[in-house]
Length: 96
Length: 172
Image 1 (cartoon, each protein chain N blue to C red):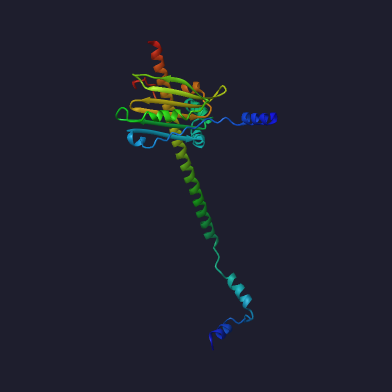
Image 2: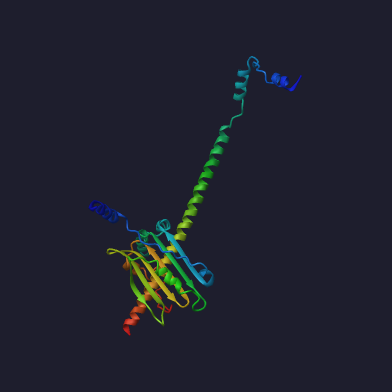
């Protein structure tokens, strides 16, 4: 037999045996499902992950906010220092 | 023609007043300086900082009032070990960016003390920007505040945040 006829024989349409559909469906029904306890554990793990992510984001935002606040205070401190220095220089000059 | 003029006039008056943000990039200057303060706070960062300023503490509430209206605070301060380590042309470069709406309100030239210039970006009666240039032999400080500024409120902040008021020479 040449290759062509071998392939044709192999790929020939065949009728499934009687009861194949039912046995296939029954087999899928027999697949083990997650038991309720495992479902609860999985849900708890997911919630923990979500809560952890939210907390981490909150901590990061807080850290960034504190840093921004410190920078604002430093910037205003430098600004007011320079404004005061200038005012004092003018005051000294006007007193002479 | 008159219709077009009226249209442009309406657009011009309706456009929001935006203060000018200066370019304060001085390549290579940080490497020469012994101390550097480089603060860049855009509107988003200022809003974030405002959330962390107390509404009950009087000092912080004042800061919150000021910062809440601003669009940006930019500070560059460089301290050097020796005199004349920075190019005075840097100051000219900052000055050259100031448009016609900027008014010089203070100009101090002193041999003993530092030279200082204060500019306000005036739109009508409103100050919407502040630039402070303080040039000492060993220190260069440039402050650019973008947004509506109340100088009285700003001056009121002096000596706050637990920092004692210092005299010019740095002595309490």
